[in-house]
Image (cartoon, rainbow, N blue to C red; front, side, top):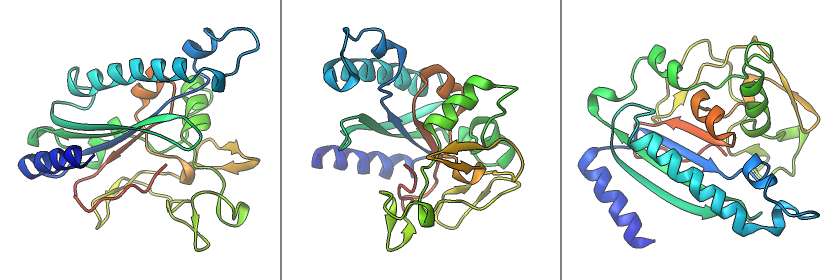
Length: 227
């Protein structure tokens, strides 16, 4: 782990701060897993199958990011795989882009990233994936025992503020466009709006049908504030 950390710091020293921070988490209910379970088996009974499908999809995702230019031209990347306490593997990925391909105007960022619930009539499949995989769970006064709660507040800073346009804050993270209008979704028995959506890329969600958080960050001081 120390060697990987040193390698990452060397990459950042040469190319600058990371541009994209992506978290890719396994989906235990994806068709590739469900269709290959034996009768009476549950996903938790087949960690080998879960890990195999996750690894195949991660390889495909890395090709999209570093070879096929899903977010323009990549010049360097760092990827590490972890297993969460409930057993689901997830990968943390940092992508560095060419200087000319870095995100700057909010109009350009909004073409790649969104933090709003898609329309259930115009794009029902994307709406389903976002509401199942990319919504922050109820916390605060609605769920004081939520894992994200710390000293009586959500450490991931949800719910976010409504934003009519995407802007940059002082820590290097973006304040994504979250308009007060649009669809809502019921999560954990509570109706939630755009303030609870984790940033995502529509293309990657539709292709991989799992939790894929995508953040634009331009400072080494940026910390992980989403889950």
